[in-house]
Length: 192
Image (cartoon, rainbow, N blue to C red; front, side, top):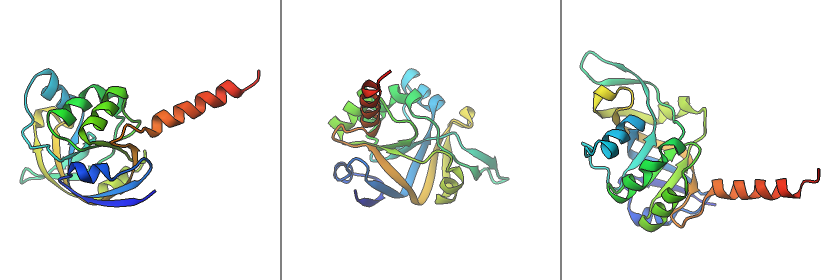
């Protein structure tokens, strides 16, 4: 296992260097995205207002406070479960060029295949670490589609965001699949 410090935007070669269970820290820009934003993009057919190519998408709906000047102050920016948004991952990767998705609980086989074919990865974040995550986000730089609040499209400037675990790499390896297989083997070996 190795640790990688990555600067956005990410290239395919950045992602292909990552191996399952490596750790990653990210500097630069991360886009916050959630169910409503992706429904607008994919179900309603409205292209995102930001260029996501080479991007990192974080599954979040942050707690924020609007300032008098119209900008947003971060209060708590935590991460949510990715699995329920799995159907959107192939489109983010194949159509919009997203290189990494950050979240909890992983993604399913079609998403893993898309990552393998296109050079993308899933980076797991520790659940319950919103306080640390919030401190690693230096600024909310831009917000689009405020009518979806808090599930807007967010642009965060981050420094040393992580450590994140490479839970699905760009070669089709999945930490979640490995754990499920080991659990099934242990259950099968039990004598009742």
